[in-house]
Amino acid sequence: MAERPPPRIRIQGLANLLRWYERNLCETELIDRRGHRVKFAPERFPYLIKLRNREGGKLSNPKWHVERIRAGELTDRDFGGFEAERAETLSWLPPMILRHTLIARNSHRVIPGDELYVKEFDKLGSRHKVLICIRVSTNLLVPVTSFLRSSVRFGPEEILWPEK
Image (cartoon, rainbow, N blue to C red; front, side, top):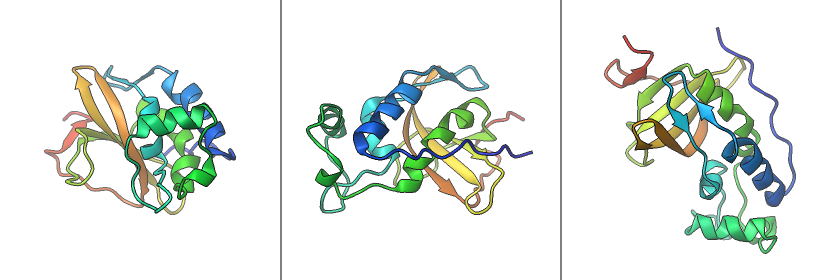
């Protein structure tokens, strides 16, 4: 049975959203059902909300941008926007890790990462949230990006959890 998603985040301003991200994700220990830890890094923040440069392109040097946002030197006006839905659903990431529907190998050719967490939520529209992670060590994964999908399909050889 699908779980109801947590309330969406309704925070104004990149600095406030970054503070929420660091406090609620980076400073939180999240361990999946396999006993593997998922550790959020501050420099992944721009990718998780799909923050764009002024021209609308992908940011280079995300760590530098995060440091400037944190210091108050860069604000929303210095960027080309971000995906509101990705930002608003950052609160969905902990239940995805703690109570995932499945874990699969990443087969995306464009998005780097080793494994992805999928969580089916009880809602209309995009029911599945996907979190792509890079495996750093045997029991540690670092998130790369996350997005919503209306459906997901994997072959049995791609599914890592639940084990057969």
